[in-house]
Amino acid sequence: MSESRGDNVRDLTPEEVARGLAENRYLLVDVRELNETAVESYPDAVIVPLSTFDPSLIPDPQGREVVFACRSGRRSVTASLAAQEQGFPYDAHLAGGILAWKVSGLPTRT
Image (cartoon, rainbow, N blue to C red):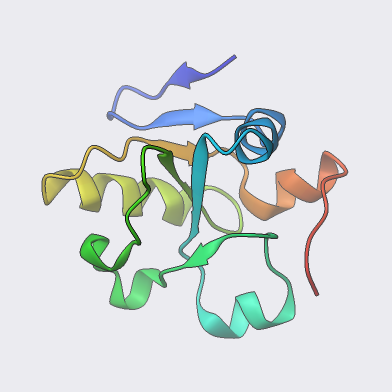
């Protein structure tokens, strides 16, 4: 199950994120750079690169929970904390990033 990191960012497993996406409960925000997402990306993720990160550019989640994702889970924590500093209630990320997503056998778009 989800665990707390102590820095106001919740770790979600790839399985939890995939289930939440399938149930339309999550909006996945990939904070990797465009050169990375062009090679391989999460299906149905919104791309908001960390290099120019502005949480106001994230589309209205329309009742869904925003979940950040990246390659390994480091930049997604940074994005979550940056969004919180600007007053957004976005406190969840995909632990392990796309690497863990693929290890779990979940699909990517190439």
